[in-house]
Image (cartoon, rainbow, N blue to C red; front, side):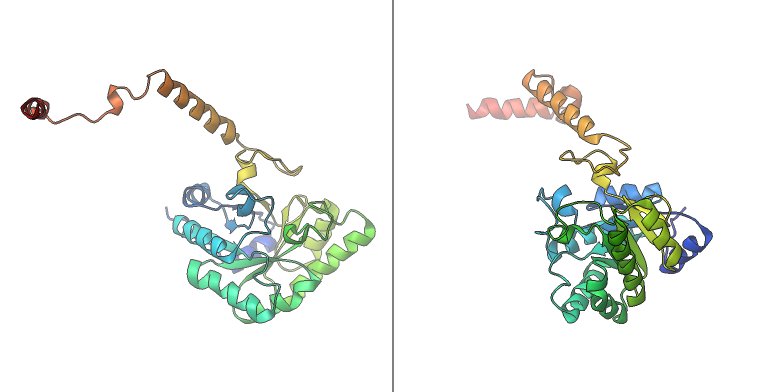
Length: 285
């Protein structure tokens, strides 16, 4: 049975009914296929691809062209899943018109359903401009990796009363600006729960507790593919790094010991053709 692609109206209904939203990052065709088959509600083509795909130290070097290319691959693989394009650093910070231009690129070139951008009160005009242009926007507050230098690194946010108040103010500002959903990252659960209770739009968590409308994880963390580090909030559901490494180790051993390829892995000449070849070879000597 063909999977029905959910819409923003479906997500609003899910919030109202208390039905949790499950979404995951994906960056390539096969992984996005798996996500759609698994019944994922949404896929985020996150700028985390900088670390998970390209091996950068963070998300800062990621470009619009890279994000668009990966969104295209994911859309081809998951035509019936709500896909979100992540706006990288530099694609929306300069001006409202520049932000609108790049948001529209995601829709026109990669056929995504929405875009995500980081920031609270400081990006209110950007959110409003993009929404006014007819594009669905997902906000992102708390730990915002693109500006982690200002935060003192990749650290949890809102852990004091004053800091929590700032996160709450960001959430309210993002909703007021017209965002259609909000992602909260690395914030104490009680802060996220309060935000989810106050906002009418779906509030989603990545490392921000369960008392909200849904959860996001980085696919490379979930399947145990990214080995550099594992955030505290991640639950690993597999360890593909170990499986893949062992498979490659066995392949190396088989090649060096002459155990691969075996006859079953080889293509054979058609009946009678081997004899003809031998004749040709003999005549050439």
